[in-house]
Length: 271
Image 1: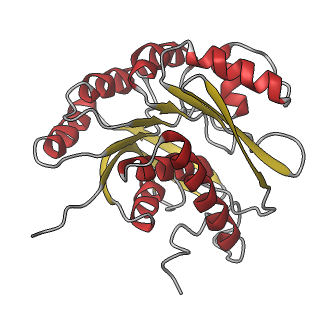
Image 2 (image 1 turned 45 degrees about the vertical axis):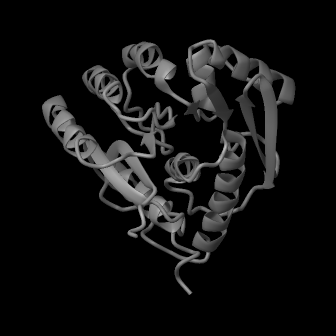
């Protein structure tokens, strides 16, 4: 009897340098024993030094990509990354409602590149919250994104403040929220998951490396992969965090380009 793949669909932008976006997602899925599918929402020209151009994909072709996959292949989980504009957000929202089987949806709330380039207009944030948050099994904002999404000017890095922000975010309709603490002070990365009316904290030592390009994409993709494999949200986050830490640690030994290099997504495959 033939085996079946665990499949994960990424709906995101392309990173020609391979460190983030669709390319990072597919590497992560493969490393975690899932078959990756993709719908490309934008093309970017970027490298380890920064982003020089972004070209959105027409929503008609976004729909054609999605429907070609959905008509033929069973999807076990979906990761949503860079969307870029209101038109794309609305198109993706419509398409997600066509999905068969109600797979988990992991939304990486990308409001700007980690190198400071904003790519989602402020007016699109309201649309994203209204259209996509109610469909999401999990949203994964970092601390600066959490401040924007909640309207809180500055979120103190205390557990109480972060938990209050997580509760406020959950009121927007998502089933659960993971606030990533990588931008917090200190030598620990403290991530807070609010899920089924409970808080779960994941703490790990920060890995001191400049090779951090694609960290957010990788974490959300890893969570999606573990959920595709049947893990609960809590366990998927725990295992994804462990994978991310090892990918960061392995990537710190390499040099690629002149700026912020990538993680080593396939550290567990390369020997």
